Length: 78
Image (tube, rainbow, N blue to C red; front, side, top):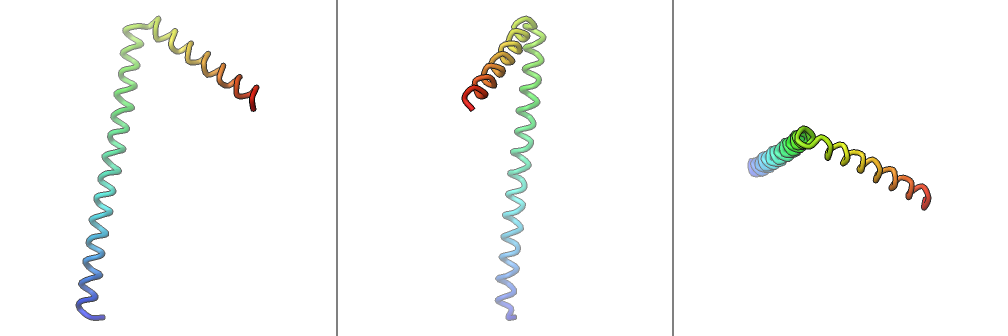
C-alpha cells in the first residue's frame, strides 16, 4: 500500500467520523427538543386543569366520547 493510499483512507475515516459526530449531535438536539416540548405541554395541561377544572373535565369527557364514537364508526364500516 502506498503512502498516498493510506492518506486517502485516513482522510475518508476522518470525514466519516465527523459526519457521524454531526449526525449524533443533531439527533441529540432533536431528542432534547421533543422532550422539552412534551414537558412544556404537560405543564400547560396541568396549569389549565388547575385554572379551569370544570372546562378541563368537560374536555376530557368530550375527548372520550369522540374516541368512542370513532371506534364505533370503524367497527360498523370495517
